[in-house]
Image (cartoon, rainbow, N blue to C red; front, side, top):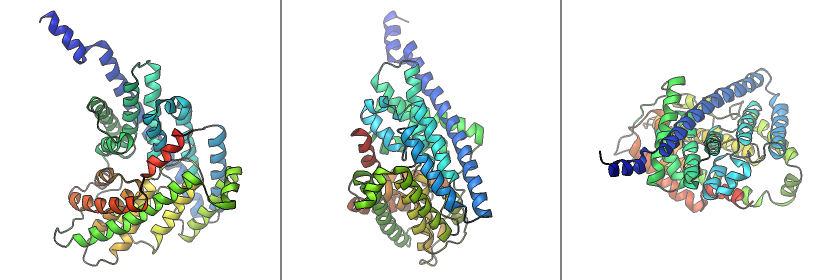
Length: 430
């Protein structure tokens, strides 16, 4: 080979520097997968302890929820600053403005605090998920690894953050395709050919590591429900309209509180006494839990899986779960809204299925999941892909996409700006 070819090949991607960057992405993805698996096991253990205590003594959450949520907010504000909320807004802000990442929201200390505080929230019954925290933890691990090996390029650092967030979603729920789509649609809101290959490789490595440790599983089990193309328009339209409006209302409430706080005296008191306010939210959460028979606590994973398996649903459960999720988020504790929102959507679909005799209930349930989740976060492609992967049902692709389109349109009318974008502004303006 000629020296000219060797020189050109080196600059096309065979240089030592390029190989080191690839190794950093692959090694980082493995670390993200390991962290997500440990996070999942720890979260399950934390909520399992709470669930056993609540089953033995139904009144105990009246003490555990206020004490745990108040403590979580105090620790978040004094020890783990930057770990509050979902975690996805922090990553979006860091991608838009690199100084946000440098300010500490993607530090290893914050990542550790995010895991610890989310587990504390689940241990006291909060209606939160671990998906948003997994995104922030994944991005923080990749960002810290890049700083450790002194990656010089700002573009490479951004790619590391993006890949870490995507790998976090993929490893947390064994949904590799959803991880890629989420990175493109929600985190970066663009497709960069130079970044895409790195994101893909990181997600693949995270998926392989997860598969090797926990096996090939579907998060919500399997459903083979299908809709007839001729008669399926009715549940698609109904779920799209109801789910989109309900999800849009949920997003409007959270964005309003994020921008302006609570109105009047409650808002001033919450700003002056955040830990006490969180304790009050915990008390309200416990009351909701007692009314629901203990079914509104935690991620909603068990209830969603039971619904997809043909289990019954209590009237109004989806509204109670939605209220519990709002209380948990408004309190200021760390925790995500992915799983609780999917659970609310499943409950909504289960309620609507009772009014549609002759239509497979499983089909209406997953339509409700996609519609409500789309309305809440306004990421329709992610909603469709993640539900398909979580339920192992590709036969419903077209109906799910149609419901997501309807829900997205109505949600934008109720809440013009996407939820995570508005929440990210809080970090960009600090």
